[in-house]
Image (cartoon, rainbow, N blue to C red; front, top):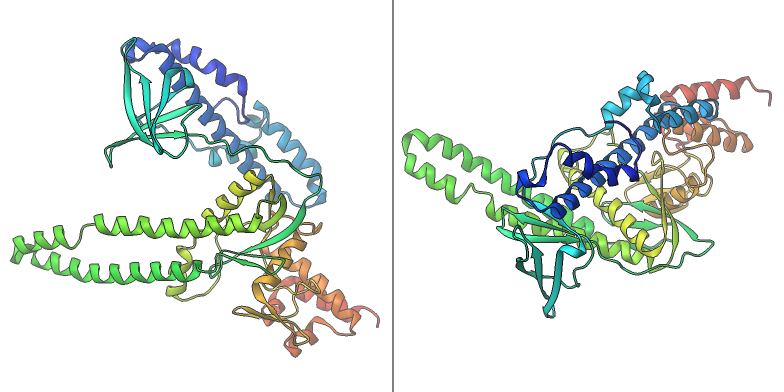
Length: 444
């Protein structure tokens, strides 16, 4: 890898460099087809390098958080844009860790520019593609099912599993007028509902029921398959013919894979509809949780772990970003720690969440997801809590705010724990003990 940042000029120079050691005649390809495919591969490599740069910058900000390291972060990001990162052991190690090296063995696809094919409409959702082939003047005809006319750069892929051709192309959904100021909302991603915004509106209410139903069905199915597998292994020496019939008729994956794809499509459609309803065609400034990191040190049952493993966090993130692009909105991810355990009215850790309810220290009950969405909205403009802070640092900031709030009431953190306002788990932290010692030593 010569450089980490994207380089548009390199994409144009990629084909002449490849042609220097590999002629299109040696592959039996026309020059134009090889040029288009090589240029597309160069763009993919550039995108991979850009993703690596983004990941390294995240690690830098996470490692050097705080105002005192502002110059260090700036210098490291500057080195990352040039070959100077090779002389920096830290950056060199992070780049090697994040850059996805490897080799592609894909031999089932090819790229066409508009000059290499013609698209003719046959019926409402049927088009005929005339593609340039290996012989000059001869074009191959492919019938394609599509609800949009095919145009622009296309990628022709032969699906060996389904034994059919697929055509991938970009679709333009028009232009969007971006207003000078956007309305800001906070979005809480959930399991029972896909999204819950800071205005108190829930989206994708059937997501939890459908995900639980899918998870329970797969669990029961695999439990029964385990019993059949044990019988199959037992009969291998006693009755090989019956063992083979069980393996062929009862332990195959064809039907289950088809059912799994159907369930996944249903979940994706619910998430997509929820994202569409969230924006309502309006250009918004959306603050959402950054759930890319796994939730650690959380005790829960095996059944709950199984259900959360099927939670489509990545699909929610991609769906939000897709509809944000279509509506001219901006999605900003924030640090998610303690957003569901803090009181959105006071901004402190006073209160307790139980299921879908959040009980404040004064006894007032709030909807838990609505309360979390308000906290996410507030965190989007919070100067003390950055996106890449760790959980312990966020807890320390919230404990300081809680201590200041209690001081105005003439109480301490220990009093809040005794009254049941503050969870006792916070009392075991170093930040709690330091704040408590400071409050006891301060004059009343």
